[in-house]
Length: 430
Image 1 (spheres, rainbow, N blue to C red):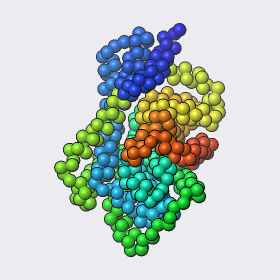
Image 2: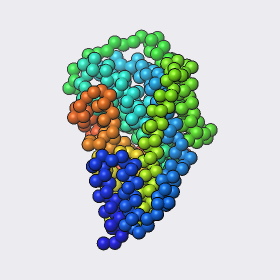
Image 3: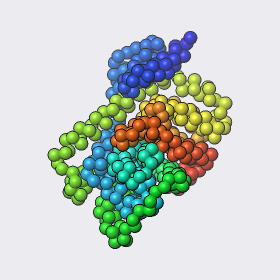
Image 4: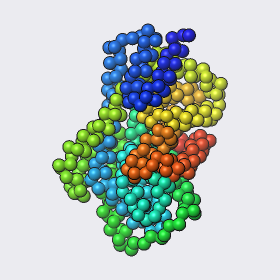
Protein backbone atom coordinates (compact mmCIF):
# COMPACT_ATOMS: atom_id res chain seq x y z
CA UNK A 1 0.00 0.00 0.00
CA UNK A 2 1.22 3.51 -0.83
CA UNK A 3 2.17 5.88 2.01
CA UNK A 4 -0.73 8.15 0.98
CA UNK A 5 -3.26 5.33 1.29
CA UNK A 6 -1.78 4.31 4.64
CA UNK A 7 -2.00 7.94 5.81
CA UNK A 8 -5.70 8.02 4.90
CA UNK A 9 -6.31 4.86 6.93
CA UNK A 10 -4.36 6.27 9.89
CA UNK A 11 -6.43 9.46 9.80
CA UNK A 12 -9.90 7.92 9.39
CA UNK A 13 -9.45 4.87 11.64
CA UNK A 14 -7.41 6.83 14.19
CA UNK A 15 -10.06 9.55 14.51
CA UNK A 16 -12.84 6.99 14.94
CA UNK A 17 -10.93 5.05 17.60
CA UNK A 18 -9.83 8.11 19.56
CA UNK A 19 -13.32 9.65 19.43
CA UNK A 20 -14.78 6.32 20.54
CA UNK A 21 -12.47 6.38 23.55
CA UNK A 22 -13.80 9.82 24.46
CA UNK A 23 -10.56 11.67 23.83
CA UNK A 24 -10.58 15.47 23.49
CA UNK A 25 -11.14 16.31 19.81
CA UNK A 26 -8.21 18.72 19.60
CA UNK A 27 -5.80 16.15 21.03
CA UNK A 28 -7.22 13.46 18.70
CA UNK A 29 -6.48 15.71 15.72
CA UNK A 30 -2.90 16.28 16.91
CA UNK A 31 -2.29 12.55 17.41
CA UNK A 32 -3.77 11.53 14.05
CA UNK A 33 -1.74 14.27 12.37
CA UNK A 34 1.41 12.97 14.09
CA UNK A 35 0.55 9.42 12.98
CA UNK A 36 0.16 10.58 9.38
CA UNK A 37 3.52 12.36 9.58
CA UNK A 38 5.11 9.11 10.76
CA UNK A 39 3.75 6.93 7.93
CA UNK A 40 4.57 9.64 5.36
CA UNK A 41 8.17 9.62 6.63
CA UNK A 42 7.82 13.30 7.42
CA UNK A 43 8.28 13.14 11.17
CA UNK A 44 9.56 16.42 12.59
CA UNK A 45 8.56 17.60 16.08
CA UNK A 46 9.53 21.17 15.24
CA UNK A 47 7.19 21.13 12.23
CA UNK A 48 4.35 19.77 14.39
CA UNK A 49 4.91 22.56 16.94
CA UNK A 50 5.01 25.20 14.20
CA UNK A 51 1.69 23.99 12.82
CA UNK A 52 0.13 24.02 16.28
CA UNK A 53 1.09 27.68 16.66
CA UNK A 54 0.06 28.53 13.08
CA UNK A 55 -3.42 27.12 13.74
CA UNK A 56 -4.20 29.94 16.17
CA UNK A 57 -1.85 32.66 14.87
CA UNK A 58 -4.55 34.52 12.95
CA UNK A 59 -5.94 38.02 13.42
CA UNK A 60 -9.51 37.12 12.29
CA UNK A 61 -9.59 34.33 14.91
CA UNK A 62 -9.35 37.00 17.60
CA UNK A 63 -13.07 37.48 16.96
CA UNK A 64 -13.80 34.12 18.62
CA UNK A 65 -12.85 34.96 22.25
CA UNK A 66 -14.54 38.36 22.07
CA UNK A 67 -17.81 36.95 20.69
CA UNK A 68 -17.73 34.25 23.37
CA UNK A 69 -17.18 36.94 26.01
CA UNK A 70 -20.03 39.02 24.54
CA UNK A 71 -22.35 36.02 24.84
CA UNK A 72 -21.41 35.42 28.47
CA UNK A 73 -21.93 39.11 29.30
CA UNK A 74 -25.33 39.12 27.56
CA UNK A 75 -26.54 36.16 29.59
CA UNK A 76 -25.20 37.47 32.90
CA UNK A 77 -26.09 41.14 32.40
CA UNK A 78 -29.79 40.86 31.59
CA UNK A 79 -29.55 41.55 27.84
CA UNK A 80 -30.82 38.10 26.85
CA UNK A 81 -33.62 38.31 29.43
CA UNK A 82 -34.90 41.61 28.05
CA UNK A 83 -34.97 40.26 24.51
CA UNK A 84 -37.09 37.33 25.68
CA UNK A 85 -39.34 39.68 27.67
CA UNK A 86 -39.93 41.81 24.58
CA UNK A 87 -40.78 38.78 22.44
CA UNK A 88 -43.18 37.56 25.11
CA UNK A 89 -44.90 40.95 25.31
CA UNK A 90 -45.78 40.85 21.61
CA UNK A 91 -46.56 37.18 20.90
CA UNK A 92 -46.74 35.50 24.33
CA UNK A 93 -50.54 35.86 24.51
CA UNK A 94 -51.15 33.61 21.50
CA UNK A 95 -52.01 29.95 21.90
CA UNK A 96 -48.63 28.26 22.21
CA UNK A 97 -47.18 31.74 22.57
CA UNK A 98 -44.07 30.69 24.49
CA UNK A 99 -43.04 28.65 21.45
CA UNK A 100 -43.28 31.74 19.26
CA UNK A 101 -41.34 33.64 21.94
CA UNK A 102 -38.58 31.01 21.79
CA UNK A 103 -38.32 31.34 18.00
CA UNK A 104 -38.37 35.14 18.00
CA UNK A 105 -35.85 35.39 20.83
CA UNK A 106 -33.59 32.82 19.14
CA UNK A 107 -33.44 34.94 15.97
CA UNK A 108 -32.78 38.15 17.89
CA UNK A 109 -30.11 36.62 20.11
CA UNK A 110 -28.46 34.92 17.13
CA UNK A 111 -27.79 38.37 15.68
CA UNK A 112 -25.79 39.30 18.78
CA UNK A 113 -23.72 36.41 20.14
CA UNK A 114 -22.97 34.13 17.18
CA UNK A 115 -22.79 31.10 19.49
CA UNK A 116 -25.33 28.28 19.32
CA UNK A 117 -24.36 26.95 22.75
CA UNK A 118 -24.63 30.34 24.49
CA UNK A 119 -28.01 31.14 22.90
CA UNK A 120 -29.41 27.70 23.64
CA UNK A 121 -28.28 27.83 27.27
CA UNK A 122 -29.90 31.26 27.76
CA UNK A 123 -33.18 30.24 26.09
CA UNK A 124 -33.38 26.94 27.97
CA UNK A 125 -32.59 28.55 31.33
CA UNK A 126 -35.33 31.17 31.03
CA UNK A 127 -38.04 29.56 28.87
CA UNK A 128 -38.05 25.86 29.81
CA UNK A 129 -39.22 26.47 33.42
CA UNK A 130 -41.96 28.78 32.08
CA UNK A 131 -43.06 26.17 29.53
CA UNK A 132 -43.06 23.46 32.17
CA UNK A 133 -45.22 25.63 34.45
CA UNK A 134 -47.72 26.40 31.65
CA UNK A 135 -48.18 22.71 30.78
CA UNK A 136 -46.25 22.62 27.50
CA UNK A 137 -45.00 19.14 26.44
CA UNK A 138 -41.45 19.16 27.76
CA UNK A 139 -39.87 17.10 24.97
CA UNK A 140 -41.38 19.26 22.20
CA UNK A 141 -40.44 22.47 24.05
CA UNK A 142 -36.87 21.27 24.51
CA UNK A 143 -36.69 20.25 20.85
CA UNK A 144 -37.94 23.68 19.74
CA UNK A 145 -35.41 25.54 21.91
CA UNK A 146 -32.55 23.35 20.66
CA UNK A 147 -33.65 23.94 17.06
CA UNK A 148 -33.87 27.69 17.64
CA UNK A 149 -30.41 27.77 19.18
CA UNK A 150 -28.70 26.57 15.99
CA UNK A 151 -29.88 29.64 14.06
CA UNK A 152 -26.89 31.44 15.66
CA UNK A 153 -24.25 29.93 13.31
CA UNK A 154 -26.19 31.27 10.31
CA UNK A 155 -26.71 34.91 11.29
CA UNK A 156 -23.95 37.49 11.75
CA UNK A 157 -21.92 37.68 13.90
CA UNK A 158 -21.50 33.92 13.49
CA UNK A 159 -18.39 32.39 15.06
CA UNK A 160 -18.75 29.44 12.67
CA UNK A 161 -18.44 31.79 9.68
CA UNK A 162 -15.36 33.40 11.24
CA UNK A 163 -13.65 30.00 11.67
CA UNK A 164 -14.72 28.87 8.19
CA UNK A 165 -13.51 32.10 6.61
CA UNK A 166 -10.11 31.85 8.31
CA UNK A 167 -9.74 28.15 7.47
CA UNK A 168 -10.64 28.46 3.77
CA UNK A 169 -9.56 32.06 3.11
CA UNK A 170 -13.15 33.05 2.25
CA UNK A 171 -14.49 36.57 2.84
CA UNK A 172 -16.05 36.59 6.31
CA UNK A 173 -18.13 39.67 5.50
CA UNK A 174 -19.56 37.93 2.40
CA UNK A 175 -20.40 34.87 4.51
CA UNK A 176 -22.16 37.08 7.06
CA UNK A 177 -24.32 38.69 4.36
CA UNK A 178 -25.09 35.35 2.69
CA UNK A 179 -26.24 33.78 5.95
CA UNK A 180 -29.08 36.26 6.47
CA UNK A 181 -31.66 34.64 4.16
CA UNK A 182 -31.01 31.02 5.25
CA UNK A 183 -31.07 32.11 8.90
CA UNK A 184 -34.44 33.80 8.48
CA UNK A 185 -35.74 30.79 6.52
CA UNK A 186 -34.76 28.60 9.46
CA UNK A 187 -36.91 30.81 11.71
CA UNK A 188 -39.84 30.66 9.28
CA UNK A 189 -39.49 26.87 9.08
CA UNK A 190 -39.64 26.62 12.88
CA UNK A 191 -42.76 28.84 12.97
CA UNK A 192 -44.54 26.61 10.44
CA UNK A 193 -43.52 23.41 12.22
CA UNK A 194 -44.51 24.77 15.66
CA UNK A 195 -47.90 25.85 14.33
CA UNK A 196 -48.40 22.38 12.87
CA UNK A 197 -47.42 20.76 16.19
CA UNK A 198 -49.93 22.95 18.06
CA UNK A 199 -52.80 21.08 16.37
CA UNK A 200 -52.14 18.12 18.65
CA UNK A 201 -51.30 20.08 21.82
CA UNK A 202 -54.00 21.47 24.12
CA UNK A 203 -52.67 24.80 25.39
CA UNK A 204 -54.57 27.76 26.86
CA UNK A 205 -54.68 31.25 25.37
CA UNK A 206 -52.39 33.70 27.17
CA UNK A 207 -53.26 37.16 28.47
CA UNK A 208 -52.82 39.96 25.98
CA UNK A 209 -50.93 42.98 27.31
CA UNK A 210 -52.11 46.55 26.65
CA UNK A 211 -50.19 48.36 23.92
CA UNK A 212 -48.71 50.77 26.46
CA UNK A 213 -47.25 47.85 28.43
CA UNK A 214 -45.83 46.28 25.26
CA UNK A 215 -44.16 49.53 24.32
CA UNK A 216 -42.79 49.95 27.84
CA UNK A 217 -41.22 46.47 27.78
CA UNK A 218 -39.87 47.08 24.26
CA UNK A 219 -38.39 50.35 25.48
CA UNK A 220 -36.51 48.47 28.21
CA UNK A 221 -35.08 46.21 25.48
CA UNK A 222 -34.00 49.15 23.30
CA UNK A 223 -30.35 49.06 24.35
CA UNK A 224 -30.24 45.30 23.85
CA UNK A 225 -31.73 45.63 20.34
CA UNK A 226 -29.23 48.34 19.46
CA UNK A 227 -26.39 45.84 19.75
CA UNK A 228 -26.95 43.94 16.42
CA UNK A 229 -27.60 47.26 14.65
CA UNK A 230 -24.18 48.53 15.73
CA UNK A 231 -22.40 45.27 14.90
CA UNK A 232 -23.96 44.57 11.48
CA UNK A 233 -24.22 48.23 10.50
CA UNK A 234 -20.60 48.85 11.43
CA UNK A 235 -19.35 45.96 9.33
CA UNK A 236 -21.59 46.78 6.36
CA UNK A 237 -20.49 50.43 6.38
CA UNK A 238 -16.81 49.46 6.63
CA UNK A 239 -16.32 51.13 10.01
CA UNK A 240 -14.78 47.96 11.41
CA UNK A 241 -13.80 44.42 10.42
CA UNK A 242 -15.49 41.28 11.80
CA UNK A 243 -12.67 40.98 14.34
CA UNK A 244 -13.13 44.56 15.47
CA UNK A 245 -16.90 43.98 15.53
CA UNK A 246 -16.33 41.24 18.11
CA UNK A 247 -14.44 43.66 20.34
CA UNK A 248 -17.21 46.26 19.92
CA UNK A 249 -19.83 43.62 20.80
CA UNK A 250 -18.00 42.59 23.98
CA UNK A 251 -17.44 46.21 25.04
CA UNK A 252 -21.05 47.19 24.33
CA UNK A 253 -22.38 44.16 26.24
CA UNK A 254 -20.12 45.10 29.18
CA UNK A 255 -21.27 48.74 29.25
CA UNK A 256 -24.95 47.85 28.83
CA UNK A 257 -24.79 45.18 31.55
CA UNK A 258 -22.88 47.31 34.06
CA UNK A 259 -24.23 50.82 33.59
CA UNK A 260 -27.50 50.71 31.61
CA UNK A 261 -29.25 47.66 33.04
CA UNK A 262 -27.14 47.43 36.18
CA UNK A 263 -27.64 43.67 36.55
CA UNK A 264 -23.95 42.82 36.27
CA UNK A 265 -21.77 43.43 39.31
CA UNK A 266 -18.06 44.18 38.97
CA UNK A 267 -17.39 41.36 41.43
CA UNK A 268 -18.89 38.87 38.92
CA UNK A 269 -16.52 39.85 36.10
CA UNK A 270 -13.61 37.55 37.06
CA UNK A 271 -15.87 34.47 36.96
CA UNK A 272 -17.32 35.53 33.57
CA UNK A 273 -13.82 36.10 32.15
CA UNK A 274 -12.65 32.70 33.38
CA UNK A 275 -15.71 30.98 31.88
CA UNK A 276 -15.19 32.72 28.53
CA UNK A 277 -11.48 31.86 28.62
CA UNK A 278 -12.22 28.17 29.22
CA UNK A 279 -14.62 28.05 26.26
CA UNK A 280 -12.12 29.94 24.10
CA UNK A 281 -9.31 27.55 25.00
CA UNK A 282 -11.38 24.58 23.78
CA UNK A 283 -12.10 26.25 20.43
CA UNK A 284 -8.53 27.46 19.93
CA UNK A 285 -6.99 24.08 20.75
CA UNK A 286 -9.30 22.57 18.14
CA UNK A 287 -8.00 25.10 15.60
CA UNK A 288 -4.39 24.28 16.55
CA UNK A 289 -4.92 20.51 16.32
CA UNK A 290 -6.80 20.80 13.05
CA UNK A 291 -3.90 22.72 11.50
CA UNK A 292 -1.59 19.77 12.21
CA UNK A 293 -4.04 17.30 10.66
CA UNK A 294 -4.80 19.59 7.70
CA UNK A 295 -1.10 20.04 6.92
CA UNK A 296 -0.57 16.29 6.82
CA UNK A 297 -3.75 15.78 4.79
CA UNK A 298 -2.30 18.21 2.22
CA UNK A 299 1.06 16.40 2.22
CA UNK A 300 -0.72 13.08 1.66
CA UNK A 301 -2.58 14.71 -1.25
CA UNK A 302 -5.89 13.39 0.08
CA UNK A 303 -7.86 16.23 -1.59
CA UNK A 304 -6.70 14.88 -4.96
CA UNK A 305 -7.84 11.38 -3.95
CA UNK A 306 -11.25 12.74 -2.97
CA UNK A 307 -11.41 14.73 -6.22
CA UNK A 308 -10.78 11.49 -8.10
CA UNK A 309 -13.71 9.85 -6.34
CA UNK A 310 -16.03 12.77 -6.99
CA UNK A 311 -14.55 13.60 -10.41
CA UNK A 312 -17.49 12.24 -12.45
CA UNK A 313 -19.82 14.65 -10.58
CA UNK A 314 -17.82 17.82 -11.29
CA UNK A 315 -19.78 18.41 -14.51
CA UNK A 316 -23.05 18.34 -12.53
CA UNK A 317 -22.70 20.91 -9.71
CA UNK A 318 -26.15 20.29 -8.24
CA UNK A 319 -25.60 16.54 -8.00
CA UNK A 320 -22.14 17.16 -6.54
CA UNK A 321 -23.63 19.47 -3.90
CA UNK A 322 -26.26 16.84 -3.07
CA UNK A 323 -23.62 14.14 -2.56
CA UNK A 324 -21.40 16.42 -0.43
CA UNK A 325 -24.36 17.55 1.69
CA UNK A 326 -25.36 13.92 2.33
CA UNK A 327 -21.76 13.16 3.32
CA UNK A 328 -21.72 16.16 5.69
CA UNK A 329 -25.03 15.09 7.26
CA UNK A 330 -23.43 11.74 8.09
CA UNK A 331 -20.25 13.43 9.35
CA UNK A 332 -22.38 15.78 11.50
CA UNK A 333 -23.79 12.83 13.44
CA UNK A 334 -20.30 12.11 14.78
CA UNK A 335 -18.40 15.43 14.70
CA UNK A 336 -19.13 18.82 16.25
CA UNK A 337 -19.40 21.90 14.02
CA UNK A 338 -15.92 23.36 14.64
CA UNK A 339 -13.88 20.20 13.92
CA UNK A 340 -16.06 19.53 10.86
CA UNK A 341 -15.12 22.97 9.50
CA UNK A 342 -11.44 22.62 10.33
CA UNK A 343 -11.00 19.13 8.88
CA UNK A 344 -13.36 18.92 5.91
CA UNK A 345 -13.87 22.47 4.61
CA UNK A 346 -10.33 22.84 3.17
CA UNK A 347 -10.73 19.45 1.44
CA UNK A 348 -14.22 19.93 -0.02
CA UNK A 349 -14.09 23.60 -1.05
CA UNK A 350 -11.53 23.15 -3.89
CA UNK A 351 -13.71 20.41 -5.39
CA UNK A 352 -16.78 22.66 -5.22
CA UNK A 353 -14.90 25.56 -6.84
CA UNK A 354 -13.65 23.25 -9.61
CA UNK A 355 -17.28 22.39 -10.34
CA UNK A 356 -18.12 26.10 -10.65
CA UNK A 357 -19.93 26.40 -7.31
CA UNK A 358 -19.74 29.83 -5.68
CA UNK A 359 -17.32 29.47 -2.71
CA UNK A 360 -19.44 31.72 -0.48
CA UNK A 361 -22.60 29.73 -1.32
CA UNK A 362 -20.73 26.51 -0.52
CA UNK A 363 -19.56 28.00 2.77
CA UNK A 364 -23.10 28.92 3.81
CA UNK A 365 -24.36 25.44 2.92
CA UNK A 366 -21.44 23.85 4.78
CA UNK A 367 -22.20 25.80 7.95
CA UNK A 368 -25.95 25.15 7.69
CA UNK A 369 -25.24 21.43 7.42
CA UNK A 370 -22.85 21.57 10.37
CA UNK A 371 -25.38 23.52 12.43
CA UNK A 372 -27.97 20.82 11.79
CA UNK A 373 -25.40 18.35 13.09
CA UNK A 374 -25.55 20.14 16.46
CA UNK A 375 -29.05 18.71 16.98
CA UNK A 376 -28.38 15.34 15.34
CA UNK A 377 -27.81 12.37 17.65
CA UNK A 378 -25.70 10.70 18.91
CA UNK A 379 -23.30 13.64 19.49
CA UNK A 380 -25.67 16.64 19.20
CA UNK A 381 -23.87 19.18 21.42
CA UNK A 382 -26.87 21.51 21.60
CA UNK A 383 -29.12 18.59 22.58
CA UNK A 384 -26.80 17.93 25.51
CA UNK A 385 -27.01 21.58 26.59
CA UNK A 386 -30.83 21.54 26.61
CA UNK A 387 -30.95 18.18 28.39
CA UNK A 388 -28.51 19.41 31.03
CA UNK A 389 -30.11 22.81 31.64
CA UNK A 390 -33.67 21.47 31.61
CA UNK A 391 -32.80 18.27 33.49
CA UNK A 392 -34.52 16.21 30.82
CA UNK A 393 -33.44 12.84 29.48
CA UNK A 394 -31.53 12.86 26.21
CA UNK A 395 -34.11 10.47 24.75
CA UNK A 396 -36.92 12.97 25.38
CA UNK A 397 -34.98 15.82 23.78
CA UNK A 398 -34.17 13.73 20.69
CA UNK A 399 -37.84 12.76 20.37
CA UNK A 400 -38.90 16.39 20.64
CA UNK A 401 -36.36 17.71 18.13
CA UNK A 402 -37.21 15.25 15.32
CA UNK A 403 -40.02 17.29 13.63
CA UNK A 404 -37.83 20.41 13.56
CA UNK A 405 -34.86 18.37 12.31
CA UNK A 406 -36.97 17.18 9.36
CA UNK A 407 -37.85 20.81 8.60
CA UNK A 408 -34.18 21.77 8.51
CA UNK A 409 -33.30 18.87 6.21
CA UNK A 410 -36.09 19.98 3.83
CA UNK A 411 -34.67 23.52 3.92
CA UNK A 412 -31.19 22.15 3.17
CA UNK A 413 -32.58 20.30 0.15
CA UNK A 414 -34.41 23.44 -1.01
CA UNK A 415 -31.21 25.51 -0.91
CA UNK A 416 -29.38 22.81 -2.90
CA UNK A 417 -32.10 22.90 -5.56
CA UNK A 418 -32.44 26.72 -5.54
CA UNK A 419 -29.00 28.18 -4.77
CA UNK A 420 -30.26 31.58 -5.95
CA UNK A 421 -31.91 32.02 -2.54
CA UNK A 422 -28.37 32.60 -1.25
CA UNK A 423 -26.43 33.88 -4.24
CA UNK A 424 -28.92 36.53 -5.44
CA UNK A 425 -29.14 38.40 -2.09
CA UNK A 426 -25.33 38.25 -1.87
CA UNK A 427 -24.87 39.88 -5.30
CA UNK A 428 -27.58 42.40 -4.47
CA UNK A 429 -25.91 43.36 -1.19
CA UNK A 430 -22.54 43.64 -2.92
